[in-house]
Image (tube, rainbow, N blue to C red; front, side):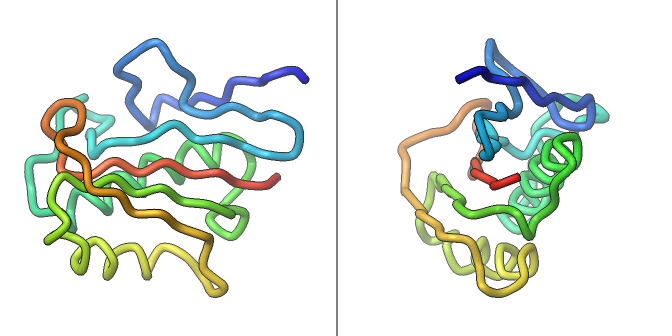
Length: 125
């Protein structure tokens, strides 16, 4: 099966990976941290603002693939502090229509660049 890279300048890449890969009918989006694409810097703010920035970045990659939030089938959320779960959850709930995508939320020791959150997605296109 071939892989087609999906990229956009409206989301930041900080390593040797693709922002998204189309493989068959699925789009696999790499994890996005709350980097501001205008500055390339980490949004140093509360987890709500960081969560919103992660989704802005992810949705720009989805848009580059010709898709939107309604095509997302799975989301993985990584938090450095599980006490941020309720605040992240409030922002998350505003990103999708019901039925919501399947989701896993995992507490981790640390994330790249000192981010409090990282989010990755799988969409079906």
